[in-house]
Amino acid sequence: MELRQLALRRLMQAGLIGALSIGANVAVAAQGGEKPAASQLITATVAHDGDLLSGLPPYLPKAPVSGKLTLAGSSAMNQLAMLWADGLKHVHPEAELQIDMYESGQVLPRLQSGEMQIGLMSRPLSEEEAKAEGIIALATAKDVLGVVVHPNNPLEALSLEQGVRMLRDPASEDAPVAKTWGDLGVTGELAKTPITLYGRSSGTGAWGYLVQRFLGDGARSRTGRDCKGYAQICEAVANDPGGVGYLSLSLAPPNPGKLLPLVLTTGEVVAPPGPGEEPDPRYPLVRQLFVVMKLKPGETPSPMAEEFLRYVLSRAGQEDAIKAGLLPLRRDEVLASRDQLGWTGVR
Image 1: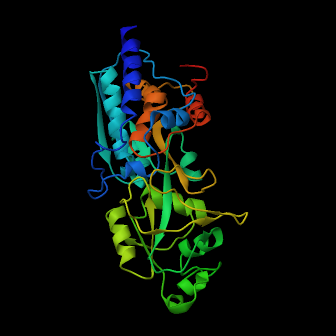
Image 2: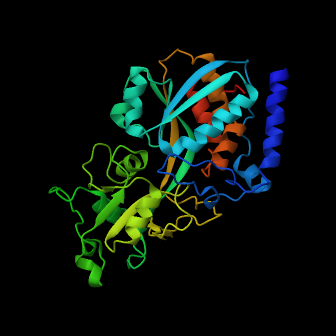
Image 3: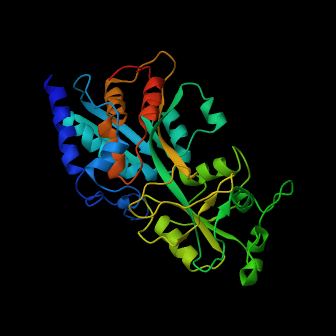
């Protein structure tokens, strides 16, 4: 009972903390020294947080736990993972979470080899990965991506067709590709300028998500010029009239540059969220962030892993997503992840 009371007190404290400016004490993320622009997506009022977190189950510990749990994976989830670790330790002082960061593409091999118990991935599993026996992926939070171009680029919005042609391998001969900006309908001096993509390595979650979103699993994509982080992507694009890049808006610098609105299949144009704004519900580049672990049907997580997951998939864990500058899951999304663990109706 004392353990549950401690958890409830922490939730009350978190509600008071929510009135302060989000991100004031956010640590530097593992993105080449970048500081997440945590306030870019969500305003920091208790009332607003309450709307986003409406109906989420509180964190009520099942039992005290101690020991070590190793988490590793996507650097986009670094700050979130640190907040989860801190929140869990408030309730379980003897619990230690070790956090290591690298690309999402390295998660499953290292998970299978036993290097860590829980992986962090900022893209969905591919069809092939999802078929791997004993692998389960749980949605835990959401991130908004944006497409940035040079300030003088006359393109006013990006359609799905243009995105596909832009990301497709220029050497592809079986489908239309865009080699120059003129191939995307741009006129004037930029029309003959080659498209230069700036991004992080192909193993990162953001790139994997965009390829899946626009081209599909296993598609051949354009090769980009690697940058160390999102600030460097913005700088490179700002200095290259033919440049284009992609950003996690929660980790982008405060003034990322010219972000392109997206054209929906209905013809509607939807802009990416500005500072202090929630994204339009129709905005399509919202990716889910996943916790991945080995768990065969009928198996249960270790006590430490279970308490960690109970915390992540609770109101407290989703408050941490807001503090990290990300979007929390909706109630139905939290319950769907809990259902994957057989926790239907379980607080």
